[in-house]
Image 1 (cartoon, helix red, strand yellow):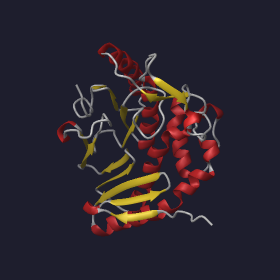
Image 2: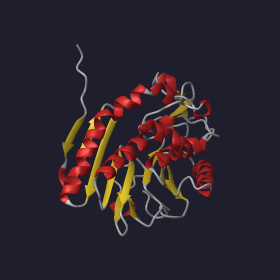
Image 3: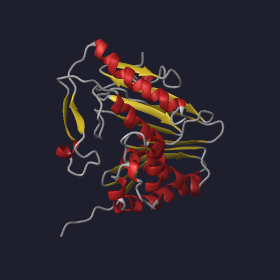
Image 4: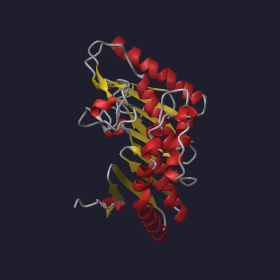
Length: 291
């Protein structure tokens, strides 16, 4: 009889806590009075016990395109659908926001149990943050996953409570999820981690190029359960010319600007083969190899 994996919760150095259950892998931290931090961590540990099972119970609906109006009832699934609803004009399923929504849900559990000065929940690079008035956080931003090291001074994003940013997410062809585009990465800042997650997926898809040596395969061939079905996802991107890189990035920037104009995101940084471009706001000089 196969053993059922149980949620793992363990303390890390530096006051952080690691939680892992199936594909969900979180690192979180809270700042505040000792009793408040302890209460926040207890609440997070309790919430984490059921969050994966809840998602699995509604998985068929969560893999349904938003145009079909997925019917969900549990909290994290509702966050996913709410984050994706403004993007109904594109092909998108609630799964585009799953990591960010989990981060938001876990942070909400912590804040519901304790008064914290600041806190974050990092779900595999999609981050929900909390900052009380006057507080700030420094977040690392990696633009090119193919590089083994990135200078710290060029990969830090400084957030303060006055900024309209409470969520950060990254998507792209080098990430852990499939992408229809060729971006190495697209990092988005938004009001929630779920909103940032959904937008990052779409902007990363938009960074694209009709190139004969870009290798694509049906998502279903790589993962039979993928919500992308038979859509072609990027497997390999050959070295591109400067003009090709600019053309692909320009497509993504145009979409990101339209999202910002609609109030759906705050900023975005798009990276492709050593070139990073932003919307010239918070991420202008803080994202990987920004130029």
